[in-house]
Image (cartoon, rainbow, N blue to C red; front, side, top):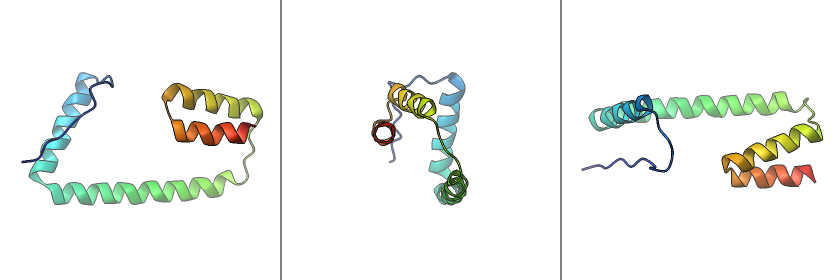
Length: 90
């Protein structure tokens, strides 16, 4: 028996909850297809990151933009990203 756990401290809309149940059901019934889909999506994300890194080599960022990113990372609770941005800021 498999159990799926969702974080109770994150607000979810009704549509999000329905989608989560649908994904869990799909995984239970056709796990191999889900693994294939996740693998394809992961490869796509990796490709997008590589392309973005190449594009960003030519981009410069101002102190105000960096400060904004740090504040948004703090607000969103992204601790590792916040630390990296913080050190880039100073």
